[in-house]
Length: 122
Picture 1 (cartoon, rainbow, N blue to C red):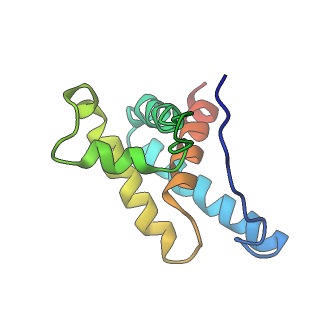
Picture 2 (picture 1 turned 90 degrees about the vertical axis):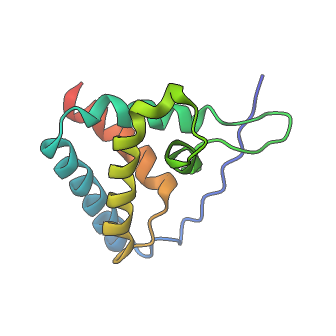
Picture 3 (picture 1 turned 120 degrees about the vertical axis):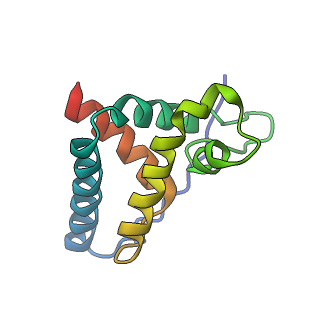
């Protein structure tokens, strides 16, 4: 069996009110993107799943760290993920939009985007 190690810094986002504001802003940014293009939903979910599945038990590296976005957007990206490029670009746009005012990582964006895709469209 594989074990993932996740390091969470509970103080990263500040006090409870600031945490709530960050989560709400992130969710709204993702929902706005999904309303603009509902076809992103299944792709965002797939990216979140692929990101989590990058965990390598023998090296204890990878996992849900947001690195899948750079893999999808790279020149050497496997052709099997080329259809995810518009969704990855959308994640990058969301990241740059919320990064200006919050301490959000790409891992946060990818995970929330997958969750919001399910919540918004079932």
